[in-house]
Length: 136
Image 1 (cartoon, helix red, strand yellow):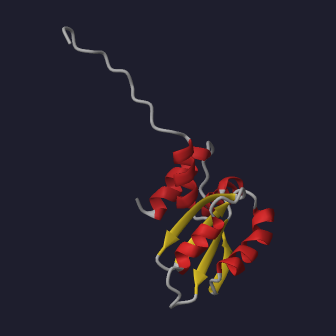
Image 2 (cartoon, helix red, strand yellow):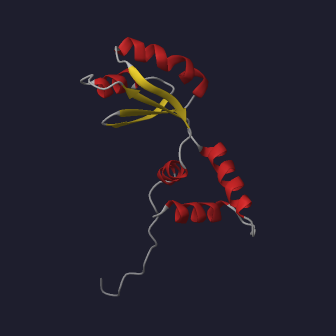
Image 3 (cartoon, one colour):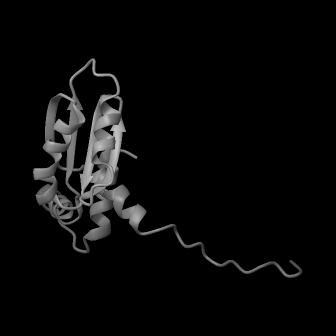
């Protein structure tokens, strides 16, 4: 699904009024992100540090303010539940892990991140009960 389609369908799902201006769509998306976006910190280790991503992820796991950790080959994304605590706690954990960073950034999750989180939180879809054929 393209971002454009996701944007339009997501906004349609939360907005009951219609508008002819693109400004309404973006304002609504910003409101949606402000309400549901879980803050995320991106940690990118300097190159040539074997196991750096794993060490950073391990240092963050188990912290009460961590909601989720996603790793890529060169980045650790830490989704946080309490940004005030996380902002003060992340760098000391990075120092303790012995990993040097090339980038430390608080990022805003994308609309797709929020959409996937909300869909996951809503649980599995409920299957409609279909009548059984007679004799079955």
